Image (tube, rainbow over all chains, first blue to last red; front, top):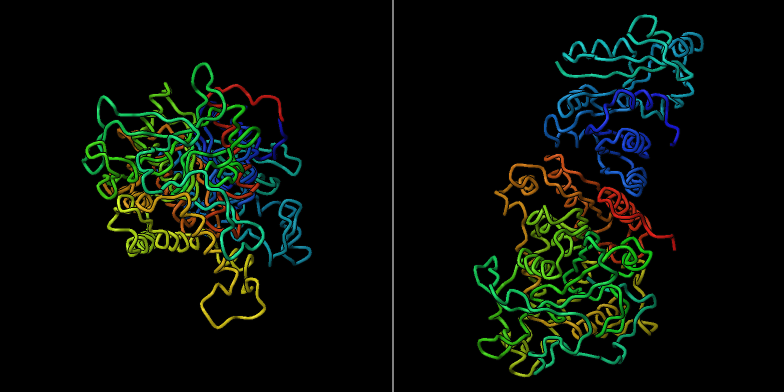
Length: 201
Length: 418
């Protein structure tokens, strides 16, 4: 089996076997491929880059070339058991709308978000006075696709405002270890990213 | 559609090449392609087939070819649907033009549509002119060529005839139906009309309905044919004439739509044909003119003018959504349930005849019913014709999609790599 990103492993663990999954921004299809073979899911993907789509379809995955922000609205409610968004919410023009659509077309949504409240990020901003550039967020401010950063606390507050229930939480550190299974002020400081299993209501 | 254009600028006049069979030669109307290679079968003999127009047609002939071997449980059949001016000679030397088969890039041993693994079927469409019953054939009622008394056929009718052929071959379920352009329309029609009979569908460079612009181009072609005095109201076979000029112009106009501006410019630019300066006349001064004249002249050797009228009409009438109460998504929701067919759509970035937006509209409709669909737009400057040409990324996609489907269908893994 191909080694997949730490947050993708945690996402995969949240998915029940034999379910229907939509992976939004599925990249080269690593997670979909993993879920298809390890969990026997009926998997679909949406990917913006032509190259990613071609590689996905060429390995037998059902993936369409499209933009989550315009194409998610086509799907009917509850079309999937899980709609997954791995580390791309912060790159959306309308993250709140995307989250809403995900929770509409999926019975569950799984989202992983990089934590802008991570202590290293806070330190960089405080000490250098410049926009943080970290290992996982390796872009300068003028080139980054990540236009809507949030802290884990910000994310939790948004779900509360939207009436979304967080069913599971996994906070992971830089080494990909789970440091916390609940959100807290500490987690918001020590976690590099969070993975959340969501459902509406 | 068109064959891959020759690499070098073609001569102003078509080269004198032996013509094995003149499809529209006067007096050959009743030949029904008997002197062409390939298989043929009479269908709807006991019970006539009802066309969309309401007319019934019985005992018509369908010419077809098969490649590869049907497996024991008859689960490895792939139906290839040809485009407007294509035919069933997919991967073999064309009996009339002597050129390679029109889809040898995609179909054949070790190719994405692997004839070592799949049983590939392709039939000449109803209304065609290379062996399947069409307007040049004899009307059994009169013994004379149908001409314009041939009933108007639709994409749906072509597919109905193909379904009878598949039944005749004893195949309950096709593993896949694949085709580009008008072939793609047939693929969509198959998936909508016979969802339980199609495991996977690959509509390429196509649309769920013919656009106003496309109908307009077809009308130009038809008018060119009908304006040719040799067309004789469609009775040219009886009167011993051939509307070659009209058919050639139709082909020339259509051919432009199969290419992109970039491709035309790259191939020809404003280069002159065998001369150093313009001649201040109406000879083919420019290579692009010469090329088009060659395309037109070559086409009339292998195609029947009335068939061209009928088949372009079939494309014009195609509108899947209209047939499903105005909603394309409904077309993919037979009996209120999501279509079981697995789709893979491909479009080409420089195709302005069937632009990506048309494929995307189909994808949106399929998403609306949460159908299983893959879609990719291939970057190319080769225009609509790209689906016939060497496009490795496109071929990778088709290969991967079919492999994935074969796994789901439980077809045995690909034999040893070649």
